[in-house]
Image 1 (cartoon, rainbow, N blue to C red):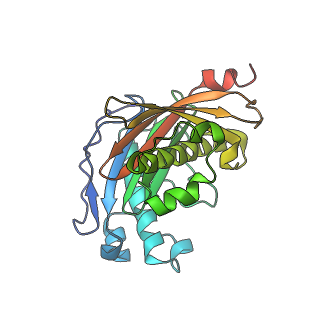
Image 2 (image 1 turned 60 degrees about the horizontal axis):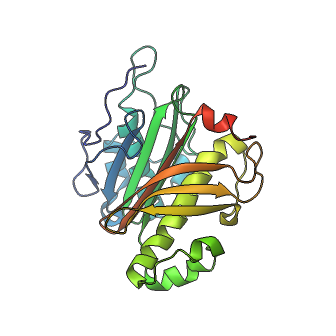
Image 3 (image 1 turned 30 degrees about the vertical axis):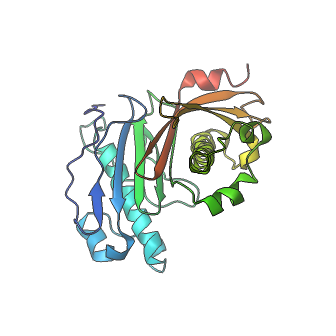
Length: 258
């Protein structure tokens, strides 16, 4: 398998009124390709999606414009990230289609897709390098939404929240996003969904006080992972959004029963 680099200032043509690439570097390092884009729901059209080579699937024909735009933006990012790799014959991998549970990635790749109110992102890696991936993007919550979501924050997480309303919203958003990344990362390995109280999250901050890293701890068994098992993820905060991501390798699965 060929890997073509980690920088995601990708150059796939896009209609300027619907999508705009966001250049940057992969949050998870050189073995994981990442793509990110802004999208405008009001500028979306099925014809524009078709021009991108990403026709809206039949199952979404009756969906709201917002849902069709989210789907197209997410698959656009997935294709951009997947373009870093080639299959055994040197051909590009096919973009995963729709699924009720999670995108069905082609054999040889693992990945994750997320979108949130105007931005989408995807991470992809070879399955011989990475066991599973989880990514989540969230717009930083309003103070009102922060108060609503904070009800679901675990006591150990709540006691470490900043008192500043601005940073409190950022941290609650980061906790929510980190747990979404954990859920997406574990789902292919455990085959079941779980609620946010299944894990607690500890955030580490950078010099400016923004979250930059997290460690998630399971609060009960989710076979084959046992209570107390933990995994590390990374966080990026910019332009009103929180982006979180984590990658699990075979060694993480092997320590699940330790």
